[in-house]
Image (cartoon, rainbow, N blue to C red; front, side):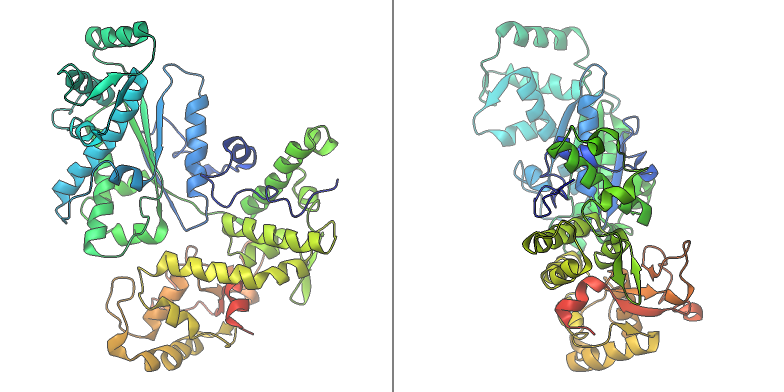
Length: 494
């Protein structure tokens, strides 16, 4: 069938939280690792992953699941970002873990308070701070959190305008009935789910920021442990999580964590599913929409938008393999590259995307990827831009000795040892330390072409082999190091 290759909706929205929920659900690909995160019986769970791996989409998926579960009472679902909480109350300027943990508990409960006030049928003028303060968590231990908050909130309302609250235009009977139930029962035992996305927004790797973020997780763990009636989900970047592991109490949170990593097969399924979802939206009566699925027809679905085989080195490869390598295996990056290549194919009046359409997009695509790299990892190495530029106009592949030599000659000597900032929180030591950091942030990957097979990938990432470039007994496992393909064009790497 004819597909509009330049249709911006074909490969989905870059931001999962901005995608139409029904569209995102239609192409969302599940994986076994998500089971605990998506299980409402697990009251606390955290997902971590690199930028663009689908953390926000996973939260949207869970929120949709909560709202559509066929059970009563329906949960209250708060889907927030940190700025929503900071707007309620400014965080204290301290590294004291007790004070910061109490702050997080107050703003979490304050946000719930506001949602409960809406549900009860009360509005407020400009006294949001008082609502947060009324959510003081002292004395909640062993109680249902929602019941305790409702009781306290109604108590404040009954004080006669302390919070300047007034009933909203809802039927009086509903309001009175709810208040009576609060008095008669031990509060409304309606579950509340608190979902927080991007807790690490604008994170800088400083002791103050580490304390601020790590105490959020401690507060969540203690809220869930000490009260009932609340479930919590949160997302955090992998690089930020690694910088929190030495913070107080974080070892107790580790057990509630899922890391988002996509296999090649899952990425192929995701690409096929996006195309199938588009066809179902645009031509629901077609045979493809009615009878195909992403498992049995993955290859054919991908070939609805891409040529069957693409030139890849001295051979050919399927489109999903080329896209996965060039986009570093991140779903958001794959979708962006597909969208840019689709525009090129439509301009050439082609009905399939070919390798030359992808190649034409690599300049602008690489510029965006470098911008992402700097934003994601600058907090780990303050001179990252100059470090990356030292590879400009150089080769794409290095042995371990060649890689450390390049770093020494083109960066360390030109910068001066005294001017090199800490590497991932540790004082600069040598070129091997910097090489390992470049491997860790995905700027270089291990090239395993000599031993590649169906079971062993050609490119080896830090997630797969975090021990490399660290132990002197096996620095590279016989592999060479290759710059991530997304960065080559913009850096004029040959």
